[in-house]
Amino acid sequence: MSGCGSCSSCGAGDKTREYRNSDGKPAIKCTLCGKEITFDKLPGNRRVTCPECGTDIEVIPLLLN
Image 1 (cartoon, helix red, strand yellow):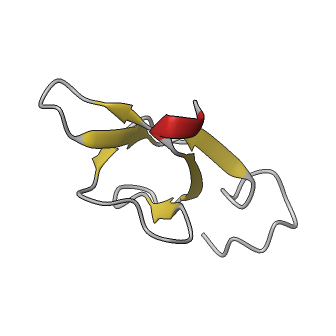
Image 2: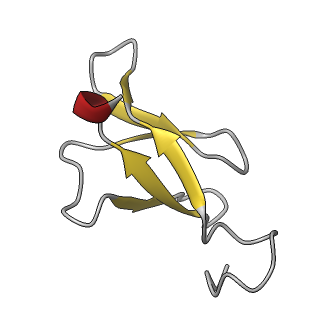
């Protein structure tokens, strides 16, 4: 995934909301493959890359939901 934004198949414009999973950890669902991605702390740029498919996802923090 290049993330160039020139077509709809890459994840350049994908956004999803942060939530707490069943273990109480911050998590998101990949907008392309649906894999749950957990993290200890949201990166400063609010972007996470899916380890399964490589989609670049902008996270809407829990406090802004």
